[in-house]
Length: 55
Image (cartoon, rainbow, N blue to C red; front, side, top):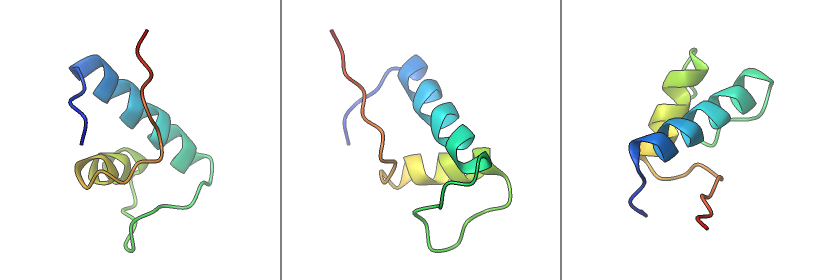
């Protein structure tokens, strides 16, 4: 897992939570009810399909 700043981490989790709330399927076998908690769990397991590009 790449080391992200706290701002990058917040951006990745919030973007994924928005995707989940709009109906995107969860990568986890057991999705939680709250999209934010699901996004945090996906981040913790390093399975979020979002990357950060730094310039």
